Amino acid sequence: MNSFKIISLCLTAYLMLAGNVFAFEHEESDVHFHVYNKNIVEENRKEQKPFFLLFAAEWCHWCHVFNEKTLTNEKVISFLNKNFVNIFIDSDIHTGAYQKYKANGVPYTVFLNPDASVYYQYSGTLYAEPFLEVIQGVYQNIKKGLTVDGDEILPFEYTPPTKFHEYTLDKLRSTYIKGVLDNFDTEEYGVGNGVKEILPETFLYLLNTSSGRDRQDAVLWISETLKKAIDKIYDPVEGGFFRYAEKDNWDIPHYEKMAGLNTGTVLLLYKVNQEMPDPKFKKAAQQTIDYMNNTLFDEETGSFLSFQQADTSYYNLNVYWRKNVDQPLVIKKIFTDHLAITLNYLLDVLSYTGNKSLKNKVIRSLDFLSGMILKNKEIFHYYSIPEKQWSGKSGLQDHVLLVKLLQRAAAKFKHERYQKAASKIIHFSRSKYYNEQKQIFVDPELDAKDYEYLMAMNGDIALGLMEQGNKSAEQKYNSVKPLIRYFSGLEELLEDKFWDGKDWKFLERSALFLSAADKFLDLKYKPKN
Image (cartoon, rainbow, N blue to C red):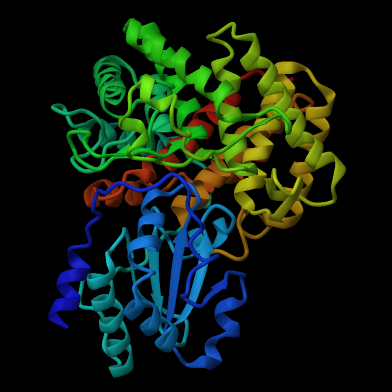
């Protein structure tokens, strides 16, 4: 038990070089993986074995390392196949499962008891020997009915307000802004003292909302954070920012390039450059737009793509040597939610640049998405370029992001096609996800008490509903008010998250809701029409 506890507490990723081309984890593995569907766990409970759930993504460098260095070990293969039900989950395709098991990053491992309750879970890569010790420890402990020692994680209890009060939103906003500013690293910049990353929604919210001394601090610290990012996690040869850095000094980048993160960062660079002009900001923004246009756009499909794989060795080469090797693989799938995030940022970026090629590609991508909506009786989660078809069950996140995107696109381009697609998505969203009793949008397959996730989803759709051009300010206000009221009292959840200080992704979700709440309050004071 001691060795298992030590390993569990000391999970560490190791940096190493890897090749350019990978088979996706489960396809050629000798581990007997079931491919995930929502009933797969229940269907295999009769085996009376514990479950090994592996979340991975095609673009993820450390997922490939785990596959090549751990899941090829004969002892690991034999032990998993004999003693576990092994389930592979593509985290981009099965976003509902990713959310259900509260996964945080990839690769992400979840061990379930034979009754399907969660036994233990963690994020990161282990090599064969320590991973073998972990799975042996998990199996023996489950067999003996033992649990993992540690603090019990109690669910957050929340009673939504029955009436809307503006002061509850004021407290939530103040708690958020103070919490973010208090947790800025004023030496290395970025938020917190661990993993360093760009947080587009968080930083944009601070720029748009904070005032006085708070705003001065926000502008300065965001500016210095972007300078660090350009120096440490930016590709000066081809443009584009990497996903994040492992160390608090921005060392050890994770070299994946994500479309949504890059377009959000471009918007940030333009906004900060207005406040504190710096040639570095403008150059990085323009070069990243060129990267999006040249590398993450598929001409045949007419749409932006979602991800480019990491390749540690490639990004350490200069421009001359890169000409002699293949670029890291761009994933040939277009994910509805990721494309919607990318385009939502680009709608704002277009206000800062006269790049005609970018505008053309934004419109083509919008046409691609709206075409899928208008031609089909359901919404799909992703498009496979090699197969030339839409696939995958969509979820709440796909719907709310599409509502926001298409309402904004209809307002910006005055295009009837986008308005029709938006109206259809609103209808689908209300029929599939609106809970009449709670008066919010929920995913019936997910945890109804995952308030952090739900506040972001309802914030996104609220922003879309408030863009409806055929509604008065009063109609918009009344339609969105229940969504804002329900989550307005989550100040204690924010305080708990800031106190914990381990994972800052909650800042992005909270910013989405607060942006919607602030726009909602603007409607309140508009004259009725």
